[in-house]
Length: 410
Image 1 (cartoon, rainbow, N blue to C red):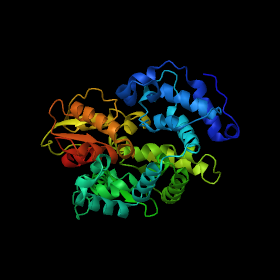
Image 2 (image 1 turned 90 degrees about the vertical axis):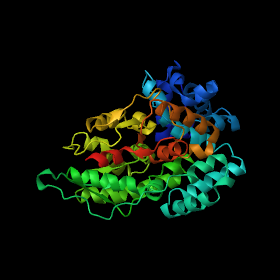
Image 3 (image 1 turned 180 degrees about the vertical axis):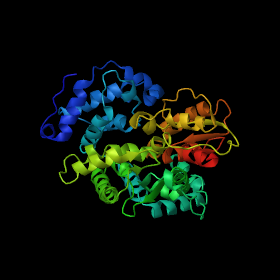
Image 4 (image 1 turned 60 degrees about the horizontal axis):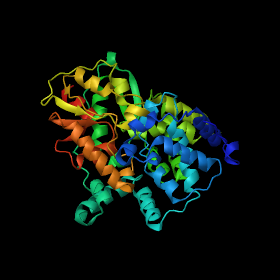
């Protein structure tokens, strides 16, 4: 596709990146076949090809309006289009440039601005989010449909106060730093507790860096890239110190956060003081399955209920390129993952998407729950905090993080 990004954006790293993505697209339309929103509406502008045309026009200087922003907002950023594209178009890199460009030129209605600002104010801070959850449960019947799901997030399980089991000296592989996060730290601290116990069994000590926190994804996707960069710089400083002190990797148990951290080099490409550091952190990032699948991890007991459905979040499958690997690990440990139809389709969570686009999110969730429970599994295992909260609201079976299933049998 011919493309010529207009000045002054053309002279920036972001502009060059966007133009390269546009030039790679041959507008074949294979992306539309796997796009969840295109399947919901059948509207060309609700598919990747249509959105690429919208962003191309905007970046080349054509007028933009509320309809342009509407169709870009409807994008889940699931990146299924990237996995299907025969030309290797990195759609999310274009969206990360094109949507902020349009947002700067189209003023949102005041209700949207207030709602997005409120989400940005609450979500990145565990104490605020914990308070919001508590208040939300009290007034849940009065909340709008899109907010009820967050208020209905399952209560965090109590974590054990007992120390992790002793690690045999010959198996000790070192230590790694663990992202505490924001929403997960408030709603599901037992995920990281389970990861800490499991990693200890293979000789790895996981510790959280006090200086790190929210990855910045929510701020970035809700119109505040400056705040996202500030979160990224804080995390990079904390994790660089940990790596310098001997930590072997940065472990992230929320695949959505992991995918965003992998893009820190793009986010901070214009900052000489952080560009190289961002690349180092992205290279050091590990999803737990990347460590555990090659570790000396064996089941010591059979799963009490082995039939499960594994939900690979879009960030796990399309961004981190780890689709199927959690399922393989759980199968090795004695579980019986059931086949899931249309596994490539998003569940509708997509970070703040369930709040900003509730109708689309709920329709996609209904389809995903039906697919996951078609063969009567005892539980659904996922890899992302947002998907866990979103699916658990209506799932007829328990929804867990897959690391908890590993902890149960090892």
